[in-house]
Length: 151
Ligand SMILES: N=c1c2ncn([C@@H]3O[C@H](COP(=O)(O)OP(=O)(O)OP(=O)(O)O)[C@@H](O)[C@H]3O)c2ncn1[C@@H]1O[C@H](COP(=O)(O)O)[C@@H](O)[C@H]1O
Image 1 (cartoon, rainbow, N blue to C red):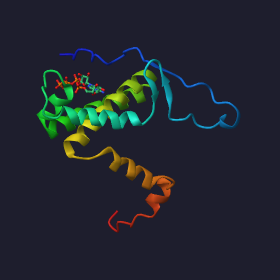
Image 2 (image 1 turned 120 degrees about the horizontal axis):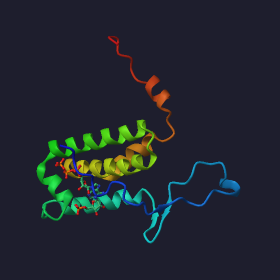
Image 3 (image 1 turned 120 degrees about the vertical axis):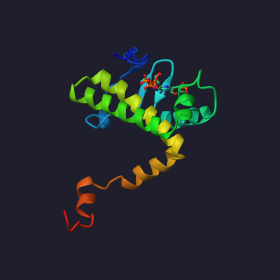
Image 4 (image 1 turned 90 degrees about the vertical axis):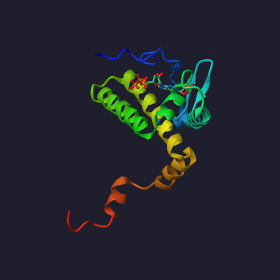
């Protein structure tokens, strides 16, 4: 049976695009900040805040918190949900559905954060790993790996 549409799907986006760059910034990639009406700027800080909220839900009433419900169901269920959301995300990417890709991406990030909470991984540990990789081309990193003689 087809699953009912998720409540968050196709919800009207509060995001409005940042103003076009001008002057020195023109031509550069857009900054990782967008203005959200009545909420404020959306930056990667939102992921840290989301982590704190999800972590605070651990052990609370699953009837009022989806995070509490997922955490109570355990690692396998959490991993399964993350996998499902990742597949839904890639389907929208392949279909070139931009708005749905944004919505599914948010689902993926939320479920990834639930997985971090369950596994005891802190966002700062992931940010540190990303910073460590910053500036190293993936091509160069792959070329520097020890070669597998059986490959
Ligand atoms: N970002 C999210 C978020 N994204 C998706 N979802 C929920 O994830 C659920 C996914 O629905 P599915 O039908 O795929 O999953 P399911 O209900 O587990 O179904 P089954 O697969 O078990 O049958 C929906 O209920 C969505 O609303 C989220 N729930 C919560 N958040 C954030 O987490 C915060 C805390 O939420 P609560 O823990 O619910 O208080 C919220 O304030 C939000 O910021």
